[in-house]
Length: 90
Ligand SMILES: [Zn+2]
Image 1 (cartoon, helix red, strand yellow):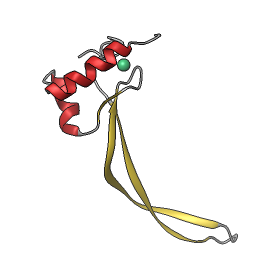
Image 2 (cartoon, rainbow, N blue to C red; image 1 turned 90 degrees about the horizontal axis):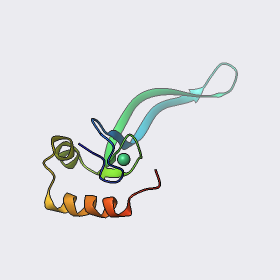
Image 3 (tube, rainbow, N blue to C red; image 1 turned 120 degrees about the horizontal axis):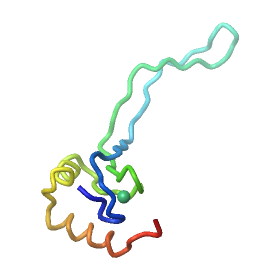
């Protein structure tokens, strides 16, 4: 697939997902705060971006897969057309 904004070849996307870090918190031997990572809890807020220019191409896995497979919906096509018209300085 090609980036709709700059036309560069895109074979994968950058996926960013909001998450909550869960730590055990206590005081260490020297009296400093100590955080021990217990878990990372992902939430539904996410974005899939072009790895070259960082433009958002999808905000859910279904659309991101559709983009990479070249099976974009009409709604996505409209959004990509807007991106293409914006173009870029690159
Ligand atoms: Zn791009």
